[in-house]
Image (cartoon, helix red, strand yellow):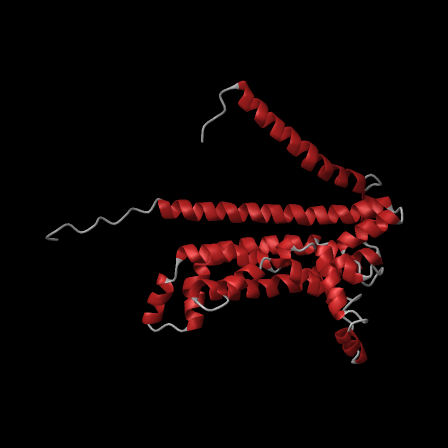
Length: 286
C-alpha cells in the first residue's frame, strides 16, 4: 500500500476524515454530551427508572433469543448448502436474503397480518390464550427475522472456500458427525462465527422498524430501547431520551470493539497460515 504523494491525494484523505468526523463522531459525541448535561445524578436517576429498566430487559430478551436461534440456523443452513447438492439449493440460498431485501416495517406488517388478532391464525391463538402481537413474543419473532441472514451469509462463502476435504478425512478415520463438527468444522469457522454473532447482536439491539409495528409501543410492556428513545423524545423528556440513546451508543461501541478484535484475530490467523513454510516437493528418485 503506497503513501499519498500529491496534494490531491492528501485532500481526498482530508475530505474523508472530515466527513467521518461530521457524520459519525460529532453526532455520537453529542449524544453523550446531552446525556450528561444534567449531571451524573440525573443520568443515574434516569437509568434507574422502571420504564428504562424494563426496556433494557426487553431488549436483552429479544437479543438473547435472536442470537442463539440465528447461530444455530446459520450453521445448519451453511452446512446444508455447502456440503450437499439437492433440488432447491439455489432457491434456499436466495430465500435467506429476504430479510436483507425487505423493509423492516414491511416485515413487521407481514407478521401483524399473519399473527394479529384479525387473522384466522391470530384468532385461533387468541382463543387459546396466546398473544403474539403487541407483546414480547412478537418482538422476539421479528427480531429473529431481521437478523436471520447474518451468520449464514458470513459462513457460507467461508465454508465453500475451505471445502470438505478435512471433514471427509475425519469421516474415513471413524469420526461421527458431532466429532467432525466439534474438532474439524468449528475450529475452522470459529472466528467467522463469532464475527457473525457480533453483527447479529448489533442488529438485534438496534432494531426499530419491525419492532415498532408489532409492539404497540406500550410503556413498561412492549418498548425496547430504540422505541423508548422515540417515545421519551415525543414526550419532551429530552434528558431521559438521550440517556437511553447513550446506552444504545455504548452497546454499539462495544460491538465495534468486538468486531475489530474479531477482524484482527482473523488477519493474524491468515498471516500465520501464509508464513508457514511450504513442504518441498519430492524429487525423482527420493
